[in-house]
Figure: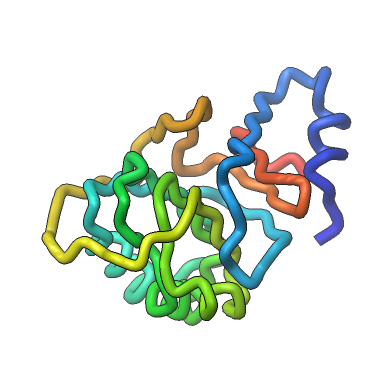
Length: 162
């Protein structure tokens, strides 16, 4: 992977391409610190059942799952979901919410960004949607967008640029 998020922002500033930058309040909790890939969006209401099923049962070709759970204070992804993501070739998970089991997730070679940690999870089955436009923290992201992440941050573009 030969890219830099800073260089992408500089190189495409006048191209008319839309480049969004994920808020710095999102921190890295995964083992993979630099990644890129196409987006799949998931909207959850506290419960991670749809995400669990997807990561456990669907093969990926390096996709990045962006999850909006409206910052509900529950751990949405932990060691088990990260292991499923790794086994099925997902590149990363970015959550507008919280994660858990971070002593383990930091050693799994999948990117993981979230706004913080919470040891508790929600066990109720609640509504969930896939492949819809998500809006949070000043960004809009939809399935098919592209993400680049490195130590400088995470950027979202509407197509692959590099």
